[in-house]
Length: 229
Length: 177
Image (cartoon, rainbow over all chains, first blue to last red; front, side):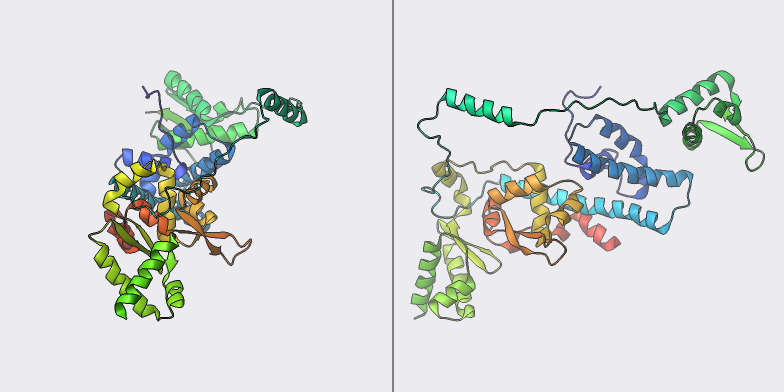
């Protein structure tokens, strides 16, 4: 059971660092790959602005990249750099985060010094003019509201339902549990789009990686036999 | 002669009420920088036992109250000693301390997230300031820390700021590079 008040994260790196430290891991490609699932799970629950969310997603895509290498180990040099980048960025970020903790400790010693002239310093305080009363303010608010552009109602558009990787894995898992063994070709026969076939295949790769299934293929492009473990 | 130079410098520091540079002092007093520096170092020693201190950041000096009296001065000023800086703000401040001068984009690439609001808070608090423009497309603002940041931490000069290399893990990370 999660506590009712979830910790808020300052950004994607903060979240990553927290996950890695929770598992007592060092920052490395291996530890990043390990916490990918956790990371993806967490960002689903994060409520933040769309700009901020975009930053969480950038890191998510880098993690998935990293993870995909475990299944398909051929990466271009550029992709390799991208991943190295994330690792060193996280190490760099960790330094400053630790240092900010040190700053906090220093500040908590309550040893501030103050420059002269603060006692009678002019403070910029807002004081409303004398003739302002409630009615006047209400009128200003009403005027401002009237001037606001009206919200246009956008036309609704139907979007095709997407199949997710999780759904497909669940699907394959059910088949395995009832049949012990099935042919991959028979599973994708019912697919409506090419996308769905690809997702089914990715689901199979993921299950293979997680050691949930065994596969056999007689030769290239032949049908694949899937067995449960 | 020596003694009067010292008292002249003392008067300037007192009246300035804000950080002043070695150069400003030596220009005003028509003496050379080295001599002013020597006298200020003398004052710093003398003040160790007093209620005021000279805070130093780079070439700039500020006369301020003694660190150990922070609590009573704060009470007198009705000011919170530690105006709460969020952990995000402290993090951003730490990055600027060690990477200054630095642009907003550079800070954001280290933190991996937007920092504009935090930079505004740090500016309002007087802990950072604009120190110039980067010669790059868009000539972005470069940020640096202020003398006030040293007083906020309760330190005497910028050399007392903990070094990045002193972090145990950071040292290891450096070796790996």
